[in-house]
Amino acid sequence: MPTISVAMIVKNEEADLAKCLDRVKDWVDEIVIVDSGSTDKTEEIALSYGAKFYRHVDWQGFGKQRQIAQQYVSSDYVLWLDADERVSDELRDSIQHAILGNEDNNVFRLSRISEVFGREIRHSGWYPDYVIRLYKTKFTCYSDDLVHEKVQLPANAKVKTLVGDLHHYTYKNIHHYLVKSASYAKAWADQRENSGKKTTLLQGASHALACFIKMYFLKAGFLDGKQGFLLAVLSAHSTFVKYADLWVRTETNVKNPD
Image (cartoon, rainbow, N blue to C red):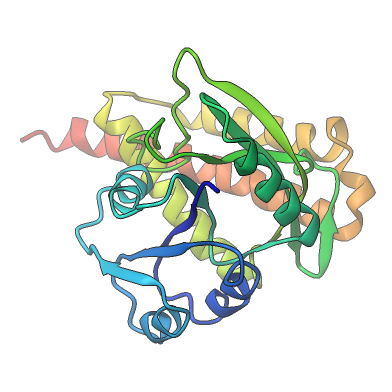
């Protein structure tokens, strides 16, 4: 029987970690957690579930942190989870069936369904939110991206879809959303700046407007009720902020050269 590990990167996840691990503790062979500097009870909770817990506080981005975590995985397969996610029973059965087949070159994607501000979001371009999260540990790994990292697909990879949803309990409140989106915006701007990219405020405004139109109208966000409207507005705001961040940096560099 092939073995499977759950791998996670975390920071200050005491509110969610136990609920996540409760859904996998009885059927995975190993839990590997890499922490980037928690100051709450994250480590205590992780160790209570028998997890292998490591600290890496030299943050180099989400992609690099996942690569570090994968180096500690000893099982045949690795399943990636975030602390605010829960594996459904149907998805668990599908994962177990997938690894039992133990076929070479397969990577598996699954569908996430997110609950935001008290409602499951089934439109707005959020569902089905397919993400690749399961593969043979020695077959591939995540990219180096600072944010929005993805599993790299070798030329011979075969992507297969698992049955069942991964429940995602994201954004506890508006403050949580704004803090989280600000960190993603900064990482996005960092990545673009490091690549020598520039932008304008007009580009930011046009991308923000396009984001709202796509989410609320083209992707039927209006069917997600008031939460759908709120998400479209917040997403447009976040889109503008990341372009504005990059623009401010380039303007500052022009006026204050080294």
